[in-house]
Image (cartoon, one colour):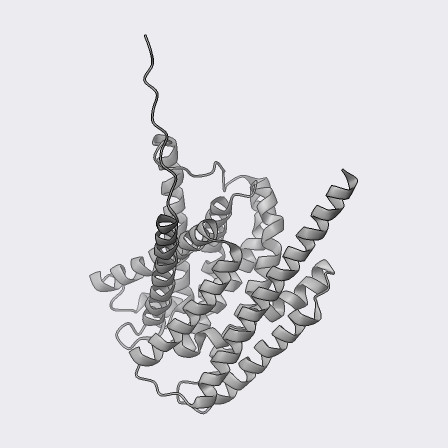
Length: 341
């Protein structure tokens, strides 16, 4: 008997690929902007009034860890439908190797939410714009890797835009030195986290989701003493709306958004490229700033908007410069390999 051959699937059309990329980028924008606004509502809105920013961050880590745990269990029950990398967060050797990165992760998400609590959403991007600058400095100090003059000029542009932004924001009622300092610390923590992530990924066989699972689980424990030291325990115990339905739903939404942003970020990089992801993130920050000024009915000066444009343009230029440098490095490596062959 002859076996019926399956007809080959038609190749995806160019229009289909464009639609797929558009939908993924749109999803990233939606989840990312929604996460910022939900967190801002939880951290400093008049309706919530809970003076416990680290507790809110802890809860989001717990939700993310629980989602990862659930996916890990379901992947074993339904391996054809759900995939999740194999790993044991309770393994002592794994804990010892990942803990330093989890501490940086805790500092990163903690200072990130503390910054968002004290500054407006419109200023949030500029307040945390020094990540690229710290990344260049730490790469030289830790990895001993030099940076091109073009990259340094882009970093100078980011610093100039940041300083102008702080100067203009200080003229408004929403300005907060505390929030600005937390933004700088958050940028530093993110840069350090990014550099040490490569080493940590080696210990989890390059599985990003497994590393996210470990970080959120370990951070859920690390945050507990920090919540007590920050004096939030009394605020949590005496908070009247702690078990109110609307508050629980909002907290769960914040936790799901915290997990979802990691998913859509990885998805956007997979469907497009790291360069496109950076460009998309920069454009998203611009849209987020415009939406925030309209949502909160904020009127900003010409120089304030100029600071945002300078930071966005310098960040985009840095991404382009690094992409060209990587391309030249790849071409040189290819040429050397060809000559040896």
